[in-house]
Image 1 (spheres, helix red, strand yellow):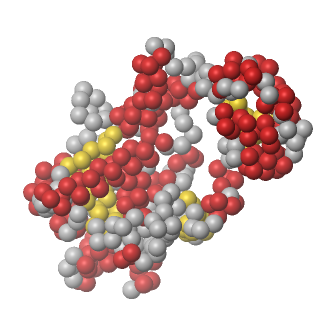
Image 2: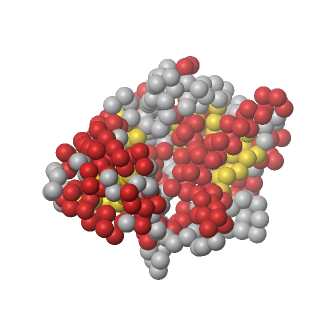
Length: 403
């Protein structure tokens, strides 16, 4: 599904005023789905481009399939270009601090007055309420929303190993955008929609809140949880490599016993139900651990696969570059990093008619499409040259080479 006109959101124009993860992730999803997404960034470029450490992959992961327009929004000329772009847009996305876009004259009230059909998505730390003025981060809301507590040890809260709240909050933003676009079909008007980090975290841990409501007991962290199933553990193979195995039903238990010739366990009445097996974990798990420790990892996984038992090797992110599932049928998308190196990163995890969504635009250089966008908005070459000379508009070397 590589042709633009075949993509689900073909024809939808999005202007993205974002940085870090939450906003770019929302824009990135829309871009992968076929929307024309123009990323507006300062002339020095989105600061995310320069992050190192755990933030070094932010820009590379969430900014493919976008155009880059680099301009000075604090100048009259730069703001005028942004407003012209918004006048033609269906969607605006922003994830800056509370009130920042209003101070620039780019808030919902100003833009919707110019373009009543505009869907304006704000991605914030908090929804309306006593916390709405606060600045938040993914890790902040994981801590205050109970997710870090559920992830770590009882006395050591630990953030999840990826920007799960930023990404999920961006996804909820996309859901709200698509819903507002659908509602616009009948109302004829756009609206402002908002997604947030804190309320997203609360939604993610809602299952544990419900668990407490149902059981009357406060849920312990997942690191020390009481398993609902008898076999739901990480086991060591003969080579001392780790594999997770989950036997989560009576049917799977029987299939497991048959595949591994565990007749004695299969015929034990005390183990016929999951509740019985949970009660017998102290004697059951050592037997299964000894069994797996006698088997090579590949043999062990092949037999689990044959029996239909859920299992997983314990991989690192680096292992996914060579994963057979991701490597087939477009699961990894080739992109060129800012240093010129080529790599492959995960595609959007959906299929349309059995087809994955691929790459239409590589990661943009800072201002790579500035001249193209300015021309499309009716600026003359003389006006564009003047803006470039004043430093109010930035065109990339790639743009200059193309022209």
